[in-house]
Amino acid sequence: MIYQIYPRSFMDSNADGTGDLPGINSRLEYLEWLGVDAIWISPIYPSPMADFGYDVSNYTDIDPLFGTLSDFDSLVQTAHAHDMRVILDYVPNHSSDQHPWFVASRAGRDDARRDWYLWHEPGADGAPPNNWLSSFGGSAWEWDPASAQYYYHAYLKQQPDLNWRNPEVQAAMYDVLRFWFNRGVDGFRIDALRQVIKDAEFRDNPPDPNWNPGRDPYRRLLPLHSADQPELMDIVHRFREVAEEYPERVLIGELWLTIERLVAYYGREGRGLHLPFNFHLILTPWQAPAISALIDTYEAALPPKAWPNWVLGNHDRSRVATRVGAAQARVAAMLLLTLRGTPTLYNGDEIGMHDVPIPAHLVQDPFEKNVPGIGVGRDPERTPMQWTAGPGAGFTAGMPWLPLADDYREVNVERQRGDPKSMLTLHRRLIELRRRTAALSVGGYAPVYNDDDLLVYERQADDMRVRVALNLSHAARTIPWSEPKSTVMLSTHLDRDGEVGEQLDLRADEGLVLTMP
Ligand code: GLC
Image (cartoon, rainbow, N blue to C red; front, side, top):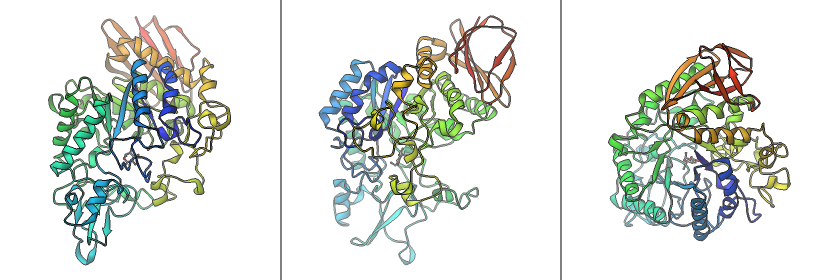
């Protein structure tokens, strides 16, 4: 199980209102107790923080806000001592505009680093070179009056895209991976991977016929020529080769793609990513037929030997408790932790944190600032972790960088740790069950039954069969149960065990894990 830490919001050790590495270190005991196998930490590199760390100004150091390289080394050491792996975020698509590479590149057309970024002559009448859009609003091209050229930025203008067709850029960025591998890092989550290589001719993107005004303006065009290009696979192969220079390292890719395109990034014969992140549980409506079809489609699409994975939430999307509601969030946790493949859990989802509405004057996210008022902002899912009912929710002794949720006195780790029926206890018990049950951790998957509200599937390994029955509705439901003598191992309500007879009664919003005779 991978646990995503958004470092600004996880644990603050020095009362500056922002989380840091010593803070994470102080909470490793909790993560071990929860049953986490690996932590993935969103960017902690030096950064002007235009995009809160996803604008990197030095790929091989730690931002003072988060601590020092020695804090980082001690975090890795402690995590390893507790049998947890450490995965870092790697941001190859773009650097910060403050990175010395870009500062040099911008200095003039003749600079040796000019070609490290994507500079282009203006189109007709001085217009941008093509119609490509920034993911965070507006054109993806920024005019540089001094050199009379545009540069390309798939995200903010403070995040210029690196030119991955330049071999020097490639070499420098592969060395970044080695720098951290040499420090003991167990793997990387590769940011914005689908954008890394663009069409060599920079052709215009076509309009998306399904877009309508009021939706995210970036989606007006289909990123046909600006993402998921055929040449990207060559880069992925090289990432894999670098990872293979070290024993047991993992590569995970951030890829918002259709299932068909997503699974291509496993590559042939194990030459691609270990885990192309599968975000489809975030994208699919929370309805049994849709979820069931998703699992079938994904399982069928996986290439031979590819290991599946599922993600339920992250720092870019509305939290699961908000998307599906508090009651169904328990069912969603059971789904995530009983499907075949590596689950990724976003910090705070294990206690049922919800999106926190952010008043306009406190907005931090540049996406919300650029494209205000249509709900694209990501601050609501990035609010501080709720550790205790005390001041600052136990997250900080200072003023938190984003407001705390109003319910932190009730919804917090300390309280839920002591409550045998809490959301946190449910997560811990599911993780523990998954770890000790081969059918759940490494077994096969087979669909058993679904209708409009129910989803039933089986996991099996060796002689053991485990069934998972999920009620995605707010009403009690009964399933004819042809298998007497099955036994309840776990209910999302945490109040039930024992044998099941000729029918299985599921209460509203209940999920069950059962062993089969
Ligand atoms: C990814 C990150 C997101 C960031 C963007 C630009 O989508 O998850 O948080 O803003 O890349 O780096």
